[in-house]
Amino acid sequence: MNTIHPWILAISLIGMAACSTSAIKQDKDLAPEKNNIVLIMVDDLGYSDVAYMHNKQGINTPNIDKLAQSGMVFTDAYAAAPVCSPTRASLMTGKYPATLKLTCHIPGMGMEKYLEKLSEGHSLKEAYFRDHLPMDEFTIAEALKEQGYSTGYIGKWHLGGAGSIYTEDGTINTAYHPDNQGFDINIGGNAYGQPKSYFDPYFNGTIQDRKEGEYLTDRLGDEAVQFIEQNQNQPFFLNLATYTVHTPLDAPEEIVEKYEGNKYFAMIEKLDQNVGKVMDKLEALNLLENTLVVFYSDNGGLWGNAPLKGIKGTLNEGGIRVPMIVSFHGKIKAGSQSATPVTTVDFFPTFLELAGGNPSLYPEVEGKSLLPLVYGKADFPERPIYWHFPHHRKEGLSMGAAIREGDWKLITSFETEEVFLYNLKDDLGEVNNLSDSFPDKKLALLAKLEAWQEEIDAEMPLKNDNE
Image (cartoon, rainbow, N blue to C red; front, side, top):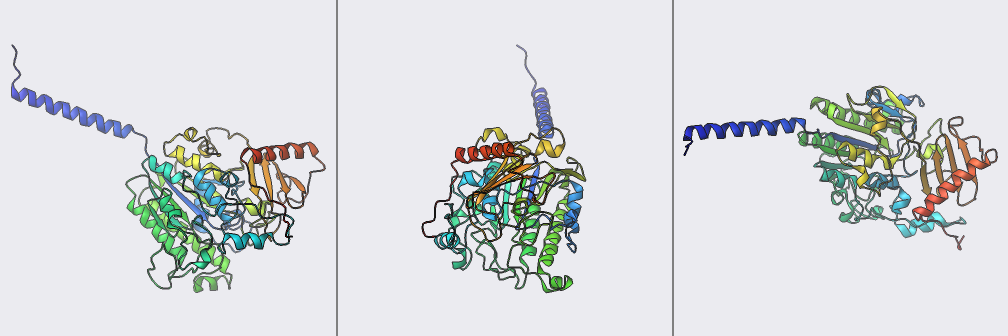
């Protein structure tokens, strides 16, 4: 019988181990790289409130402009609602606010008082809506956790219950906070819709006060940078949701003086500085080439959105069309632009696909992945985009619903039963109501909108007997 000398066996085993190690290394090298995702969600930043749009004089946003030049600017990007909480819930779930039954901002004064106040003097009462993001909703953070991502939420959440003005620190129920919806850390997120203070002390139960007089936007920028540093060696999802530029308007005195007392412009500059802070950290850590960065606003601006009609709270373009940038060094063409209508529900499938997940496994998600569009590899199919906002606002056209398909947009008012039809390609300012001139188009879009409302069982306003 043949025998194997011990030294031959040892050499064989070493060789096998070396081959095995080489194979593992090769497999690792061939494995798809996990890309990081940074979403900067600004509060109440209007379509005209960034310098690269060239619509407002005096706006100073060099870092945001640089981000725009590095990637793709979306000229026809929309928020899922004309106010904040619904858009935030939509972003987390990939569902329309009407599907979630969370169609209005969650009131700091409490639900009962808010519904009574807003319904007063109208023929229709405010429709029902939830006061928090339900715990059984599956969020994009949870989906990315399944893909091996570290997840961080820094800033405004506003999905954590009603009645925050009666609290000492913005906490209604900690179970509703981001760290119970898929995020590893939560700094700043609770029931607050606006900060109790833009300066330390913050009176925020999820931010530990650090230095008296520190500015909140700077603090959140610092926390974002720290999260990136701590997670640079693993895939991460960072949602930096600034409280800026929501009221109360406030900024460091020296910046306000620079703008001759214009606190809003001063807040925008501080926002821009912290966008730059985040981008500088990504560059310093050599992460730009494997990090998708999205810059976005939760609804239209409150201080004018020229050339658009309307402001925050309205179904006109000024209430729902928002600035949006998508940047990914080496993968998205620098200086590119898209006029394709996109909206909040598209982020969930986009981020999931980028992380290596399969959006088709989540049939409840109502958006479409934007990756083919931003990579320039395929035409993005035309589809209708919907808004359902059965709520009164003092700012303009509200208490209604809308649909955009192609160049056409239709708005229907629940209160007055008026129908407005616009061709946005020819009439961006929504000046000419074409509903009488194009009755077939009006009826077709109205039928689609009503069919969608019925399909998702949208909450509708009821007659107000106490008018």
